[in-house]
Length: 185
Image (cartoon, rainbow, N blue to C red; front, side, top):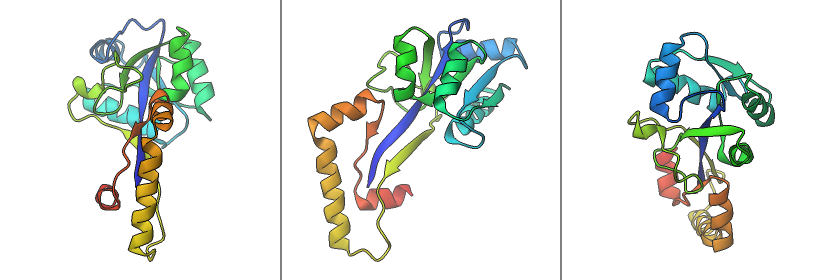
């Protein structure tokens, strides 16, 4: 089963005048070569998320890799980097503390924990970059066991306490069937 989808949130430091993705793109175009974005490493999902934004929006913003989310978020909040892509869960303390301004989420739809923050796709149709967390079994696992495991995971994810915990962390529960997950893969 694909258990959850994990969107990122694009946040800017508080000196950036942009309040939404349209304004951020305009700001990047008006300041060529001056903006930077942080990720937690070269070639990871956050880095590729930023490059996808560059390509789809027709901007050129320099990537600054860090060794982890805590440093990338701290340096963005410290105004050493213009903006960053990071998980919603890691970003929330900075957002709630007024250190970073959320501009958009990377899923196709808004995140329930940040309902006032639009999806990038609302401005750039088709923009989606999420990661996922799922469970896989060895290829020769009997079908009955795969089905049973999938159903148990789905039941566990449907428990209100778990649903709330995942939503509060910015995760979207998927709980797909084995067939849906196979098609996704």
